[in-house]
Image (tube, rainbow, N blue to C red; front, side, top):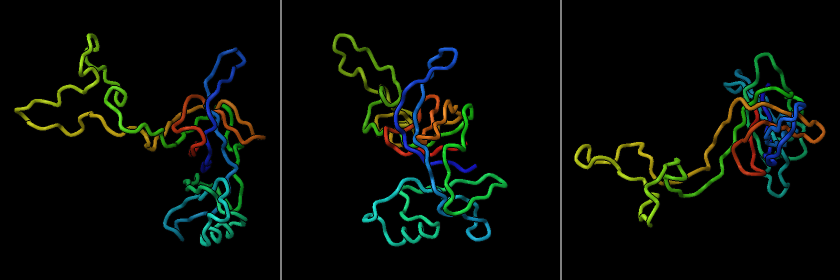
Length: 205
């Protein structure tokens, strides 16, 4: 099984038969079209190129249109990604992949780009406790000492300091599929996944 490209809709909760509340993330997964099937003989590695969504015609280049036309598609996909196929699986260009690939109770891993937080201090970025905050302490959120001044007389590499936070590619593993809605192409995954609303994610087994 390769994978699906999806879009993060948001979070909600579902109730089990026992009445337990389960927090879930709703993902619009697929349908995705197989644009190209790569092989080790022709391309040097085996992969399934999958497309999601549709690009506007005026924003599509001629090479993109030609690449999509080889798979029998009328429009170029908005987003394309490659997945490693499982051993023994065969796919054809133009084939549609849907959420029916997954089932409730299955474990998946979801990859996305985390929310960008901009330049942040160490309290928010790394969870530092901070220094005394009472009586108007002037340095309550500073990182504190950078290290000894005599030896090594420099800041050690890897020291946690203020800086850019978020906007990184992250993968969350072992997320359980709680529900599959084939009619609306929705996947309900337990817990949170990286990214903001309407951001793109990759869903793999």
